Image 1 (tube, helix red, strand yellow):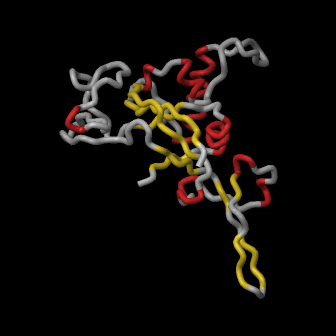
Image 2: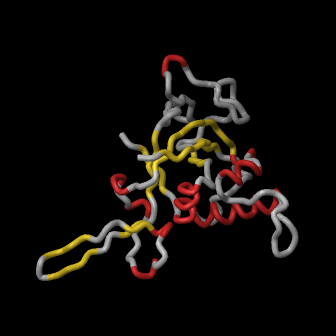
Image 3: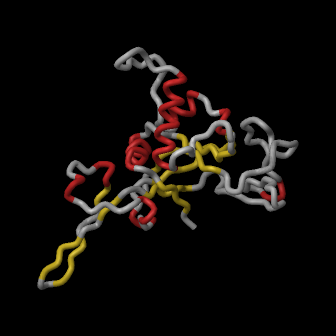
Length: 201
């Protein structure tokens, strides 16, 4: 089974260029509050030996779930288009177009990333590191690796980039993708934290 992630156009471009090397996936369902099995801070050292290669954690329903382990390949689904030309000879499908690097986007009828068949994915990523993260524990370094911030002291129109500026920037972009109010550090939800490396197919 090929696993995939759904990326916005800016994310697709950043993943291809290597400026985004981190990906967060909200845990569904959310685990219990921290205990001996599920630590309160980011910690990848709780693999269960009887389930080698799987993440195991408790939920409120007492169930256990797993997630692709290290070394898994992830296909990136992005905004795409495949227009057709109709003639007396029949219908001819044009080559796949990708919005992330299209210089004339107004010429295409774009489709959502979620609708892209995996066979059309052109970007493939290897999970070279995995961990857990509570949203309230996210760091400035995490934000930069997510492609949602800039290095500290980068000049702005008025002043310089600060950790607070990066956090606000992440909140705005996260809400644009997931909906108003999705970025809520007070809820302190758990996320899978994946470190990615682009691979050639």
